[in-house]
Length: 186
Image (cartoon, rainbow, N blue to C red; front, top):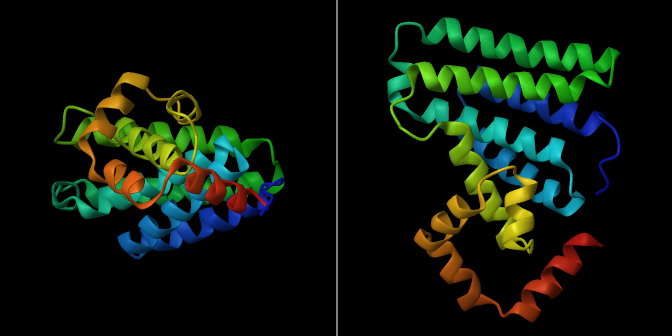
């Protein structure tokens, strides 16, 4: 799949918007996983950012401390309005999409900073998780960290703590991983 225009991202934003509106965290998770795979295949950073957005919204819906907060309905409505605004403005002006996705990321980060319960913020944790996924899909560690705009050392630490890293190499040799990557890129 070649993603050369904004229509693919806009169609995904529509799905993300609907899933978030309906509190469908599993759909958000599956969309984010699909998006990161496509982003790596196409080496498309905007798709990667869209995957991060979907994943962060999934995490927000799955954390009870967010939903239990008295200001949650107001913040959810603001996030939904931002997503809708990005879609509408980007349909009229394709150059707005990048700016809009960045603004949505900042809005999620501000929400997480204000109401989150963890020291490491949701956006950074998501970047590391998806940098690891990019690595599992065949990117080098350095390229994966650069692609997801995250800290190389944090990525190394994350990978050293995950079992997926071990399982990936138990299941497939380097040549099998390269073969799988080449097949995916065709």
